[in-house]
Image (cartoon, rainbow, N blue to C red):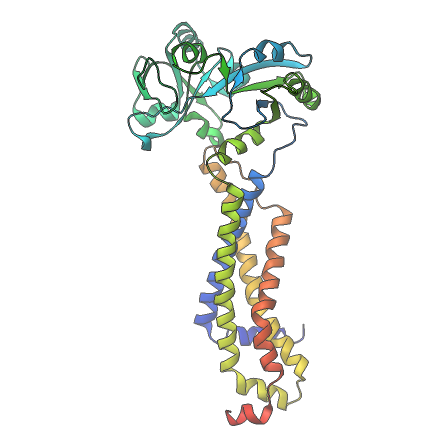
Length: 385
């Protein structure tokens, strides 16, 4: 690297242009780092090994409901400590813009979520009220609800007696103490028995089961046993980790992986054009300088590596800075989501892929200008031809 000072000086010959290009590279790799964390988050969590909570859903789709008759069989399996069930309701409060998750659940559903703190008196009031509901503190604060209020939901899937009106009475407000998981307070729960009796079309059907194995070591065995119950039936199940289930739930709205890939592809295509134009213009302005270098003894290969090194240094430097910013921002985004988005941070493979892409882009955009500099004729260049 004895010529690093020459590469550095050439790179910042036009400071404004270089800094603007560098900022573009930083922004591109900042986006890459954060999007790759999203991709990793939505492609992980498939294994149930060591899971404390698992979710059993239809093997076909999360939208396919399962027979309630599986409940007693799942609870009776060896290795199952506890189990509860739920079903997506999808009701709307006043306006579709007010969307929040709402489920019908079994009476013991909260027993599997000790992080949801509900006062015992409120829990008893909820259990005693057929149309009772409980919500998270954040959701209650958002809409100004208090205990005893009526919450009217409009059904989007399940009408009742020919109407979409489903009124519920607020009987409890739970709290999640972990500040990183505050997003879990934006959920409403009500009784599955009420849903099952009151809806017009679906009877004796459950969306999914939450299964807690007796020990984390038994998770794999329990998952296989649960899925065996409905093997070769018209309602085969798939038991997976809670993280994988959450990913499946999100993927029903959009193909996250495809969206991330499309965005990154567009970003890097634009980056290629931008940095390629920068390098071409920089070399074109320095034709006489490159000719002088050749005149004082620099070989064609040396000129090639000088220009190529300048291009690679520009993109790798911007890429490293962008990935560094992404590493700092990913935990902030996860914390700011209140637990709704659990990003893994920038993994070593993300760093390796990012820096590898930066080096590759640097070579691609610098190759043609470098070849032009290498093939430069000294006489023509100094004569301005």
